[in-house]
Length: 86
Image 1 (cartoon, rainbow, N blue to C red):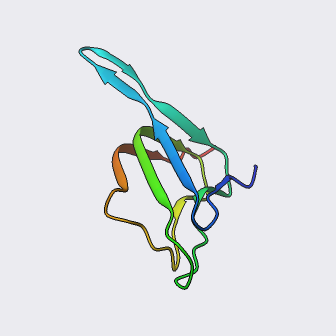
Image 2 (cartoon, rainbow, N blue to C red):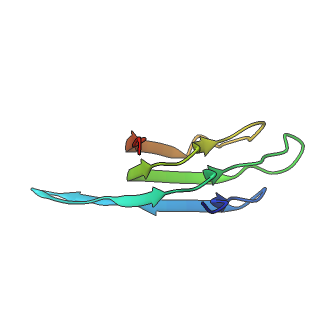
Image 3 (cartoon, rainbow, N blue to C red):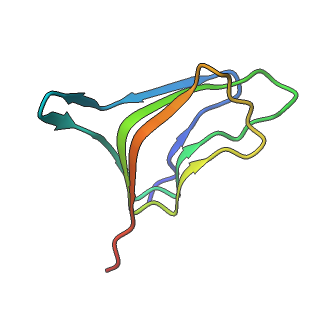
């Protein structure tokens, strides 16, 4: 497993899979401890996050956002969560 993606205070993250007509190309994040980690500090600037059409597979935590201030422009849509048993 790997640590995952950490979005630092004031940082931004865009993960944008595509769905066009009948073609689907989802992004995949797998085998992470915290796939997307927004550590956040309420006293510091916000982090802008856009996650669209993304598969989260076999992560301990898919999106971790404790104490994170996320602006109204942030979006999370079209995600799937999958945990496989071995």
